[in-house]
Image (cartoon, rainbow, N blue to C red; front, side, top):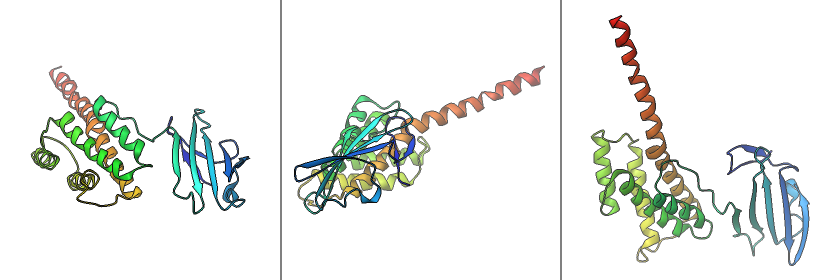
Length: 226
């Protein structure tokens, strides 16, 4: 049974009659249907479907548009929410804005999304670590800080960050002239999200836990003095 993850509360739920409803239109004729399983598109060869997914846990309604058939098969849009941007506590307003823009345009222009992901990475390195300059130099300086253990980060991130820089350049510079595929833009965005999670969220959690355990030394020292 297919499932859907709620953007609002994070719960996953099964796509059944009570959670899924769609409006199907073909050549000016629309009809309302509840969940139709695998037979949803068999009535018409060219179909535009407006899909509603209601989360049983929180009641949030997701709305998407999908095209089926040669003339409309490239149509896939998120209407509510208009992107699946995640929440990362502690990020600056500037980083948040650029990240959400990258999420919002990915359906319409993977190339623009990759370019914005690159800008987002550049902004993170400046905002969080105070590293200035061209992105290639920013990543090099970030790598040096990591190797000196000034920053805790998985070394695999460095290679991935350079990959984001290169693909983002393809979206920024016409002389490179490459196509960024939707799945490539999505993979780039996922690495940006992993990076945001690591440097803003995980770092804070890690620091708090280490400090709590470190403070236990005082309890032992006090006991020895008794």
